[in-house]
Image (cartoon, rainbow, N blue to C red):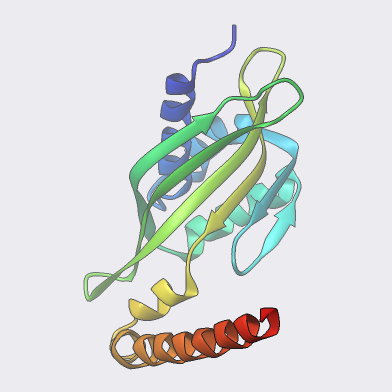
Length: 177
């Protein structure tokens, strides 16, 4: 029997909580996350990409050993597989990076997506895991640099973009006349 969307949402919220909480030991991840990974699973984030279950497991172990963070889920949405089309889960939240805790906890707005299909038993098999976050959000959260980025760079860039937009619009309108 195929799981309903609500069941899948609960599952992907749980998987995200496990994957993105570095206090979770690797043996728990092996038991509760790895069984959902397809042999061809890919991982992509703004810094890196990789493919294959063994590489994923190694990266996961390293990630949990090198960093300190947890994920606060804001919302979860799932579109179950339809025919030959894979299902998709999207988890929106904030990754709370705690590398310098208690001095600094660095909130990073993050969107995590999973591409999956349902195996023979109806259990989801994850083939793609992508983590998306904004370099702008990352810069804005850095002490001192974040203030300059938010108060000086972003407004100046916005004004420059609007000037360029006005010039481009006029130029394009002139070409049509």
